[in-house]
Length: 538
Image 1 (cartoon, rainbow, N blue to C red):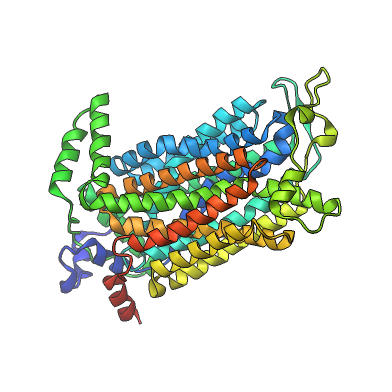
Image 2: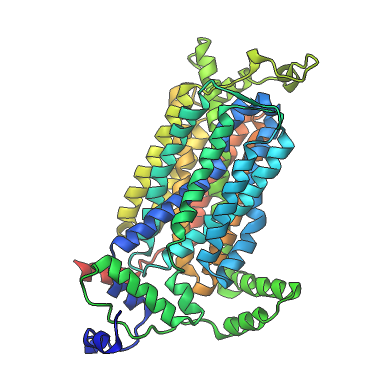
């Protein structure tokens, strides 16, 4: 055990003083500890994706077991996002007042439990309720993890760390079509009379999609609260302990302990701090509502109002396409493959959709026992659906790596404008292309607008102080999830009758988001401290 005399010998005179947290992060270096944080954050992001988007592979093959109409598919694909929206404000508030880790850890366990239970449901309403609860709980880590990861890094490495986690998330998301292909396309089934269900591969797939949440929660048991949050709550010694642990992991156990005696408090609006502390003293429901109000209201006041509005609109537009249109991606590819199997080689995406639509009564084929007609049921997905989904996830993984490498040099604005313009243009052109393979590739490009989510989140973290950061990310992502709900239901309601309109809406909305990106505060400015640190590191 280290003693004070021994520690004092390791303290250079220049460092035997309190330092700003930004300087303390430089002292801890960037190494193994940071990489572990980036990896676990990426796994958590991948867990969120599996929990929310994995249902898109279930919809085409569970329609007979659950007797789903196209509109019910839209509802079921969006209900997890509805749960996320309902709880985003709560989790954002609790993350800012109770701690980032204190929210992420239990919600991961609860999300796993509710997702596993949803695999045992017998009808549309039961699975809808369970998927809602899954979204309600997975909302905790889905936004808070960005603040948690960012608060272990200074300005120099914050954006890179977030993009690094997004790269790990991209690698993990590649597993989604692989897992779906390896499980869903099997032919086994197991009758469970006690529950009144036939346990088919799609049910097991839901459980497997929930496993990363469970694994991530177990790993998080060994990680501390973020140092920035600890410091903002006046817990300086705990902050120093975390920083010393980071240094020990990054520099090696053989080096002397980190020469750090104190960390200076970050600047926080005194009025906001006083109001938060006064509200925190109340234990009643009114006290809770007051604290939530004081934590949320500043985001929509003064200089924060403009940036909050812009970020919320951007996330709404991104999620409407990247999640809403993605939910029907496997289903639409399955329909195109069905048409090609009949010898149709020249057709637009929407014409293929119109040619393969069916009536739910025909699907059910009720013959007295309520079972579905086997000749109309899809128990498997065409291999092309998995192949193109795999290509999409590979593009995401590679794209996040490239963005992480160039974001500091190029800046966030050019990246946002390029992605929005490219994806939006492809979305509009899909309506006119009658070569199925080319149309599918344009569809893939349309869905890559999800690259912008992490870039916008990086902007959000830089635009708000520590005491509002998690709430700001949660609020902006709450509007993003609202976009997912609107997008999923939009496709569910329009796909069979006005397919072209769905692509027009998503394409033009992305182009509008590209224009709006120019109005993000400070988006033109490169971070001066980042530039200086980058130069000094060379």
